[in-house]
Image (tube, rainbow, N blue to C red; front, side, top):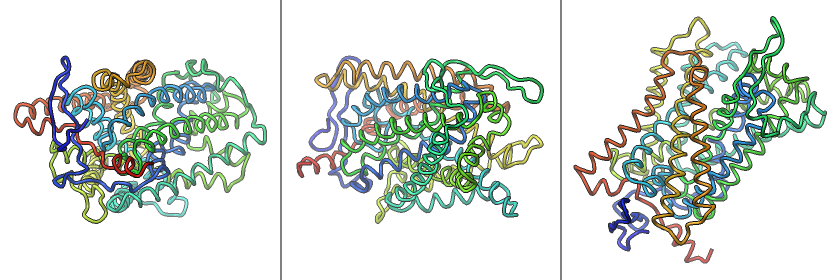
Length: 533
């Protein structure tokens, strides 16, 4: 793919302008990340933690049970596992051809064109940036509640600020530190949830139903039941499916760490499949255990609708003990922190990639002389996160409720997540199309009927459908806040601005335009080949 001098040689195939990738591994004029810094476990910690298993379960499962597909919630996770595994087939094939810190941005630029690549790159920066802010809100809410238990009553802003500063400090240093911190948090939360699963199923639960994992039930809405104070409102299956997919956001970050992994052509694909399938099995079993901890679906849905914060804590205490319940209440805080840190690291790498290619200020593309971290991009993201949080502090209405709940949880956590997921779903569908086109035009010998044709088509269609579910249920997802409907328009505006900016660069600075999404690092591949690995 790359020309021998690391530069560009242009040719054309049909209507698609094709410019060879720029291999920066042997160039001294381009800053590079810490190659070979992390192995398979490091990449897994950095990506799986982004999916935040404990946050996905304790935040999203109650919503799916109470407002979505009820008993079919575990089946929803199973369906999402299948769809995302199919998406990973083409994604993995692409990662074996393109090693870059730009992830989706680089893949779309290579597979379609620079305009869509630029638009996707900016959209991903915004999406992951608001994901970090989202988790800051979730962290602030639960950390504030925990401090209240000990007689301290700080504003949620101070706990949010603590998270922003600590992440900024940790991410400034070598990626090893981030991987270790995230690894500790991930192992702890997974162990706790596995214990939860074991104690519920070991005691037979209250209502273990095979129908919970029947894929057909993923598409059935929760029906209304009960009367008076015990009434349960009907749900919408689309809500359950949407939150199932939201629970995986972060797994797709593996290719972003390709430039820093020891053997990206092997490690990145393995990390992708392990995270997708592993999380899928884990989510399905854990959500099944949670529902089985209640006597019937009505009881589970009632608690989910009226006391979602304790949806897991009740069964944890009943089938386990108070220690398990309390441990979960602590690890939801550390899990939110770890998830926010994972999104911070990925956002910094997108900013770094865009800066290194000179489509954003070049300072963003610099690495620390000692730690080899994208320190300027990382600090920039911390400032952005702080400004968004301050905007909520300044303008968000509490609606007469405690600010930690109405602002930090409902608005910062909830609405920032919705804004980001809409972008992710749209871009993942676009990536699938890019993968198909990339192999059709660049690697015809490797163009396989399943890997690079059928699987990407299925992934594009199914994720477009999930995006439709999100948009059609935006009123619910927006929690009734007036500005929620504008968040998706903001996503679209960012994408259009990206296209416009790429066209401007094309007309004003052709050399810069040629680099959009095309910088890769093949140095590690050459080293692996030389070693015979």
